[in-house]
Length: 459
Image 1 (cartoon, rainbow, N blue to C red):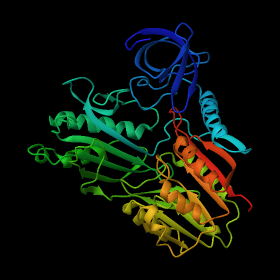
Image 2 (image 1 turned 180 degrees about the vertical axis):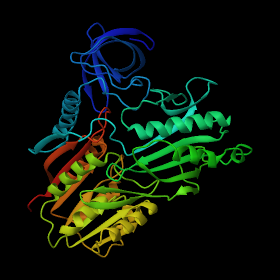
Image 3 (image 1 turned 60 degrees about the vertical axis):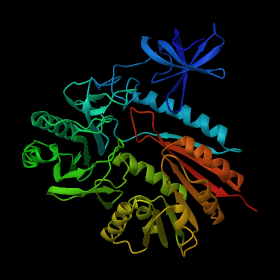
């Protein structure tokens, strides 16, 4: 087998997150391909062969998988955002359950209770936040605004009919793209580091229906002085939306990195925050503060976390990697005290405001790296909730967390492979896994949240 060779084969299984496995008897080896589903017969090219392992790229689906459906989204396959929209939702859940359970069975020492994957209350139009990128659909083409093309760093797919957001997002996207095109100003070129338009950030609350719109641009001259901000704002306010615009913002970003970075934000209309409600509590959300992107699904996730943490009366709880303090405030009414730690200062400020907003006086929030901050905390926890970023917990921080010796710990993982890695240390230091369940916050995609309850082994 050599790089560049073309083969045909059937995808026998898909491992997390989207690694399809094709067995080639004639070569006596397996090839891993991405973005397929079990049962598809595909034509693929080999793009990597190393130490007995081979990876390929799907060129064409020759035969659909049994039960495969036509995706509702016309951008499916081009856009890199979704992978499983060609599967009925029940089959998506079964696939994710097989993937996550297989990983956990291998990672967990001994028996544990597997609770399956809880579905998202909304299967489409569930996201409360989207970051759209400016670019072009092909080299030197007209300005585009949407998502990165699957497998491409450069090309952007216009996603005017995206199905994971509602009609308000689609109207705001279309209106902003029209305004950008009419202005004649260039998008920011990722290689040349020149241009003006970079990203469009839209957030909308599922419960309150409030909308925040933020256009991210460079400050490069002469472009910065040529855009008619007032005309864009007026055009947006005239759109027939089902929600209500809470604020329209302009964020400056001259960083060479292809990420949304806040280097100064100006309010053009309204305010720079909006409100969302979860489980009877109210949360103020700013443009860049972390908040679960599926509000209705987050209620399912946090209910499970609250169930796992169990009895909290007269207990001190640490909520580590607390974001805007959502979990802390959900636990606070039934706990003695909750202490949240979060590295993003803006999120900590929001958490403090939200606690005040909800009348909770037994929450405190610290800004800083968990590794350093937990040495400064005056409290000793009875229970700990971990909701770390995708890469999991810093091993040194995990050692300190284990050192508290709490009786129960709940670990919420947005990337189950990080949980698998951290379980090795947790189990090696005296914790056992009681139960694990998943919550599907991202229908149509490869992602899934995983919740794990650990308890201290009896000495």
